[in-house]
Amino acid sequence: MKEPFDQQHAKTDSEGSWVERFFKQLLQDTDRHNTPKFAFSSRATILLIFGLMIIGFTPNGRQWASNLRMLSAFRSGQTANANDSDATTILPVETFQVTKVHTYQVKRTYTGTIVPRRTSPLSFERAGKLLSLTIDQGDQVERGMPLAYLDTQKLRVKHQELIAGRNQIDALLKELKTGSRSETIAAERSSVKNLDSQLKLAQSRHQRRQALYTAGAIPREHLDEATTEVNTVQARLNEAQSQLDKVLTGSRPEKIEAQTAALEQLEARLDGLEIDLRQSILRAPFTGRIANRLVDEGTVVSAGQPILTLLEDQALEAHVGVPVEAATQIPIGSNQHLVIGKEQYEAEVIATLPQIDPVTRTLTVVLQIEPSASREVRSGQITRLKLTETIDDFGYWLPTTALVRGVRGLWSCYALREAETSIHPPNTFQVEKRDVEVLYTQGDKVFVRGTLQNNDQVIVNGNHRLIAGQLVHPVEVNLSVLRNQN
Image (cartoon, rainbow, N blue to C red; front, side, top):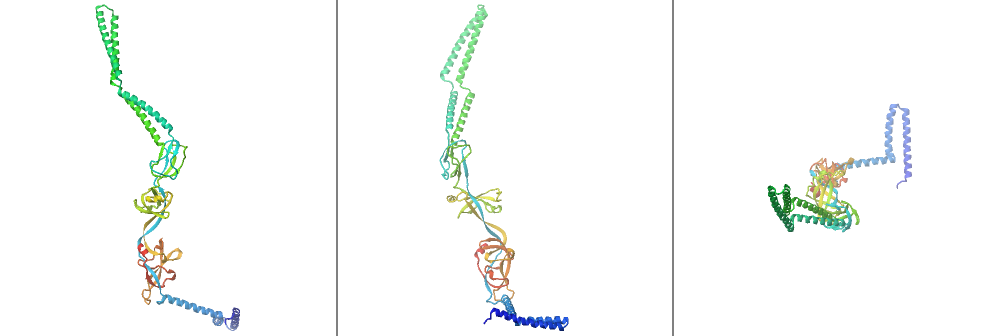
């Protein structure tokens, strides 16, 4: 039966006190009867004997000796297990033979925005009062469809005025081109004939007076009167003949040309007015959907003031910012995958903008989304472009389970090396720690480089059970994912 703790403690104190009293008396006797040098050696001998007696006769000493023997046996057994393991203590481990590669592919995702291919703020080209709107926000419109009207009363009044002036000038021009009427020509001819008769009469009278003056029958004054009458009638005849010739010839070309120019001027003013009338109707420039309605009926709008905003929702584009290096791997015309919401769509690369965004320092890649997406995708949504980039760098693919956390934030893995002795069973290897640097992580695999060598056998899991130098039995597994990467 085990003694109570208080009794054990009291018994230990009594035994220890007896030993201490005995050795104190022994030391005092030695100091009285020996020299200092002999006393020092005697003291050492007595202390050694004292320690052995404590270990042998006291419970605490006996417990310490027992623990010391157990620790020595444990360490001896551990060393024997590490160096002289038999087949029952060799752990089986799953291994994978690594292969050195010189390139690896990195999957990256870049974010962009869905935008319509065309966005137009619609406005009138002239000022006026907004008379009516035929659509509202969210309505689907077709190309050429009238959307809004301006008041055109003043334009129509001016149009009528210009038409009247044009008709007047056109009539005058026709008269100039047609010439005088036949009655006018007959009257002019009759006037010429009458004056010609008067001229002949005046000439006959002048001849008679000339004869009489020569004979001295009349004075010089009567002859001068006859001469003046002939000249006057002749001048009147010449004038009448010129008028007849003018009537027969028609209007001068210069006058016709001037009248034609006046008519063309009025025609141009009418054409400009008709353009103003057509511009008083706002039509859809392309098929799309009305995004905003900015004014209401009755508003006096100025030229160029936005009235509506039209989006081409049937042709959507994605504008995605990518680094300059990644943009070189996206050729024009290639098909890419876009993730919008929870769906994935096909998109064709149609352009890469030449200017770098000053804020994000990226190039904008423009992709045209398949037409079927227009029923589900909306302008302004966020899209993600998934790219696979090829990186030129050497290393090895490992499963993430093969990694062991090292010192100072580094990583390691366990590889196999030949056992140092030949006394072990066949296919037995020792565990060796290899330091590695993680270059890229993808799901449950990592791309690393470090002290690994090509064709090394790397332990893929269960590393928490292993230590460096431990003997293991490898079982190679086929990791198809890593094989594809290699």
